[in-house]
Image (cartoon, rainbow, N blue to C red; front, side, top):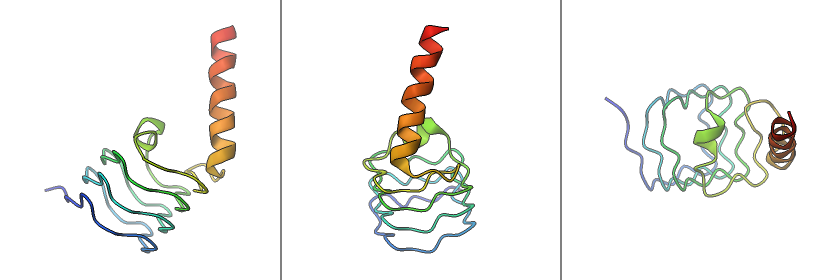
Amino acid sequence: MTANLRGADLSDAVLEGANLRGADLSDVDLGDAFLFEADLSGAVLDQADLSGANLVHAEATSEQLEQAKSLKDAYMPNGQNYEDWLKDKKAQGKAEKNE
């Protein structure tokens, strides 16, 4: 059974190592949440607010994270802040087009 947390306010929540595999996190406020090493595999992040969240070492794909409403000031699974992660992602896309 997967959790349906649609619309929940989990801002500032400490969810370190949480198993959120397959959870519906649509429209959830996870602003400034601590999701270090959380398992978000298959979770639905449509319009979730992840601004300021710590996602370091979390299990989540780029495609999942791109569904979020905001990742401003978040720390991404690879440890980069969102803004640097986004720059690298765009640069990588340009490099692949030039190959």
